[in-house]
Length: 87
Image: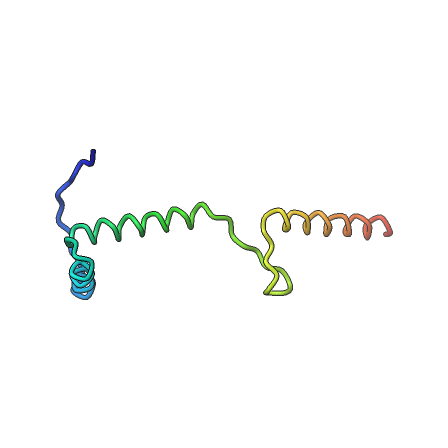
């Protein structure tokens, strides 16, 4: 069961025109368009916060995930240890 809250918001004219056009195109109410757009926007924002960033070293076409990055860090640390041992 959904609880509804009535509220007043100020929407820029160009946005309201786009919302009305979308409502007409999809044959739904303006309120339904607003609810869908808000839900989608909030979900995308949440997904961006929860996703791990992609890190790129050297070749821009080669993307490293978290595990590959950790492997590269371990290899670089091992190489540093070997260099330090030769000093």
